[in-house]
Length: 391
Ligand SMILES: Cc1cc2nc3c(=O)[nH]c(=O)nc-3n(C[C@H](O)[C@H](O)[C@H](O)COP(=O)(O)OP(=O)(O)OC[C@H]3O[C@@H](n4cnc5c(N)ncnc54)[C@H](O)[C@@H]3O)c2cc1C
Image 1 (cartoon, helix red, strand yellow):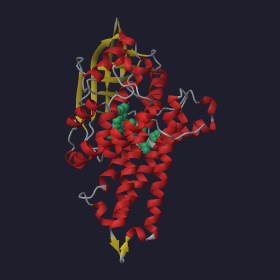
Image 2 (cartoon, rainbow, N blue to C red):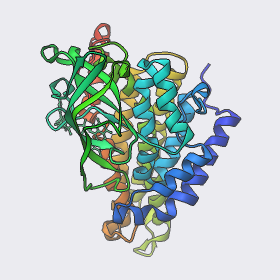
Image 3 (cartoon, helix red, strand yellow):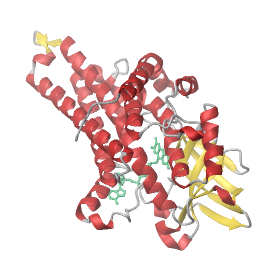
Image 4 (cartoon, rainbow, N blue to C red):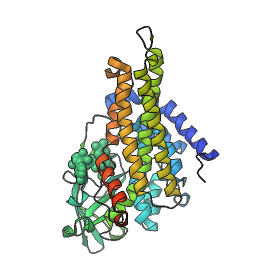
């Protein structure tokens, strides 16, 4: 049976997230964007009301929510401000490899840090010379006795300056391409971890994006996640789990842009009538509405498959590709509906257009999603060996 009805609990959590976005995020979002302010106060409030770490199981101190409910939260936070939303949701990306491949001790220690206090974690995959093709990474991890020693530099790391710990991908077999990558948990306070650079960005300016270096960083042998040289698979399994949420955030941006454009088109009068009376505007509004609905359904499907314990690689790439590209198209059209005012910072839609752009880039670009989709459609038997796709 196909049933798109949310449970009462899901509706309550969605309402909570919407309320939070409306009261705590929207009123300050444009100021935070202008000044690229770090939203520490909002992070603390979101943590307090239970909107962070939604996937951490109850036994590790989290709410243990299902993936679909996580998507509902991410859409609402994205509707409020996707820059602040990205800061709030990044713990899910960093935690997923620990949830899949971490020992019970690691889960207890590192999930505990996130659930006992409003702390943050980051996911460190991308490097200056290894983005979409992560097999080109240069960071290494070498086993020395009962320690791993990590050396290398990761770039574009969300929440990197503020994280208490990192999941770090490194080469453990330099000759083996993507089959020589392993994943580790690295505490921020380990000797040799430095935050080198905070990026100044086009959009999502309230989120922190930093370059992190690891110089002879020693971590216990037990901080290896999963098996040695199986880190690439762990990264791909992580992205299957997080792409529904990031796609939901794109739907939130798109929904916000659609609402602003719809309302403005009914107020703005040109040629003696509200511009919504002109069919060219109506068609833009209609296309926005359809794209939002279709993207949301793909997001829900990709989350629901995970909740049913099914493989969602294809569904999550459909959702990510379509939701991200739709958010970009819808925000560009929203600026068009606003005319010249859309280009002015005093009006809300230019920020949404800048914010939407990142949705086509992080957690795998739209091109990489198409590569995944094409492979899954053309060669369904070889999907266990996905091509390199980035965070
Ligand atoms: C704000 C921000 C936050 C980020 N957060 C994180 C994070 O928390 N952790 C993390 O690890 N990374 C993060 N990233 C990195 C992000 O995932 C990468 O930027 C992204 O994967 C693309 O890599 P790249 O920038 O090196 O682009 P490249 O891989 O150099 O790609 C350049 C262009 O070529 C295209 N391209 C590449 N290969 C192919 C191909 N085979 N076929 C067709 N087209 C191709 C791409 O789609 C893109 O258009 C973040 C990036 C940004 C900007």
